[in-house]
Image (cartoon, rainbow, N blue to C red; front, top):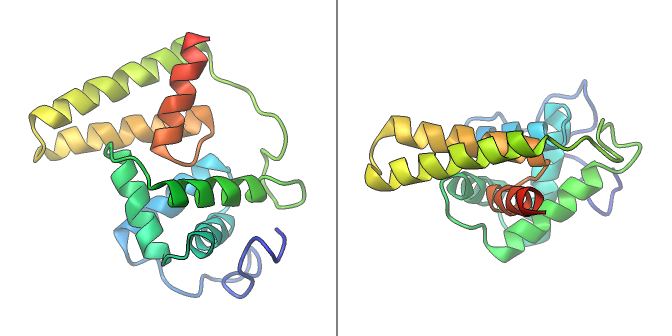
Length: 168
């Protein structure tokens, strides 16, 4: 990644341990989601999270919490979504270690429709019982699946992409 996109001292490469442990659950979840989205190793996902936070002018933990809230149906603030999109695209550039630097395979329409159906069913279930941990887990699983299938860093973008893809 280029120095103008990603902050340099956080992580230097695959052999360098992270500067801060992944102690906050939201941050760990966000790094995992970014690893699936890029896909790539943890150090690349942490660099992308750090770059998005820097671009949005926020702490990494705030961006991570917004990503978790996004998985539960709260749209990401526009500045965070733009910063994440920019950082993920930078992470996909050739020479950054990402296996998806170029084009990638799209899921079948049936798989995308099935994932959307699971997502909407899970959201209805969560709205009916907001304190049900199984309902929350179902929404998280459905969102994660959509993000991976549609190669999008945020739940909002993944749902929009899947809707456009299945309606095309």
